[in-house]
Image (cartoon, rainbow over the protein chains, first blue to last red):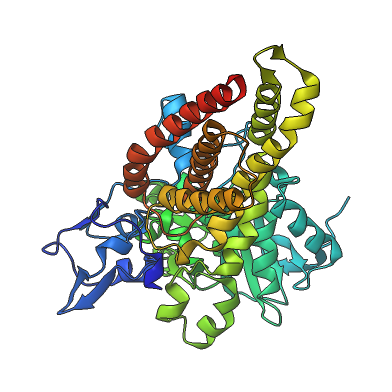
Length: 99
Length: 374
């Protein structure tokens, strides 16, 4: 599975272990096994596997996790540049979906 | 027209809830194939709300998903032989993960949908099971907090109301009326039964997103369809330029010389949209643009060895640049289909790749014209 690791040292994921209460929610929602629990706290053990989806930060009851989340999608980023907005994956004309 | 997946009704304190089949029929399968080819994809929806599979009671599990029909079909198919409730959120026909990314599969919609369906009166427990990838848009602790005030009949109760109104419940009943607990289930619906049998715990494997060969191949048709106009435009441009000579523009010449150019262009598309995604983990670089560039270079070399890359050196070089540039750009767009690229990472690779892709295309076109006028 390590074949599916993206670029090194780029993601914005940060964690304040002081605030962590060890509930393990981040571990449950992460699709890429970035976190591990040890000593009653969660730790980032595989930062480069993070895709910045933001699920951990949104579900952390202690707000101990920070990540600038967004779509890892080149077409979405180009769309954002063209429309002068944040990267968006609304690529169809009627505002429907894609991605 | 009634929807064919509805096979009955279940009586509940809040009225009759449609019961849906857990078997997909030929129409469902046909619909799946069509949306994979981008046909009717923006309008493949089911009505948001509460549904039943089997014969659920107040104690049965609740599974939440998006109102994209593909998501809905996938969930009900994997609930065969179970008695459960389905809570369908309004994501405007987008799948769970993408909708969660946009926020339409979000805490607010879930809270509203719980109220609108009067779910608290249908079930006696307070556990709702969400697909793990929904966590991108749902905050479990916020949902819990916000639904603590929900009561039967979707009324929101506050203490002052309690004192003044003659509502038919005591403060004691409010204590049992606790908020909804969001439990994140497995990533894939096929693991639901195992998850339930496992005491509502997802194993490491159930939590992990993969991106295997079949996952990738399924996504290719939509990308092919999505890029069709750009391909036609490129076809037109190369066809016209193929008619150039020192004596001017000739349709006859374009027809004679242009067809192999169209083939080269088509192969560049295949390289970026089909070959690179199919071989994704085997191309030994990490940047998608770079992967597509490598596939394009290999393709150009193969074409050169078959003497199909043009009749002059400028033209051969132009095809090298055009094929690898196009392949790189299209492969880069596959980041959006992939399950592991980050926004920061894609931005980083684009900063390097996009200027190169533009330069390759412009120099490639100039060399193409030079080759024709030589």
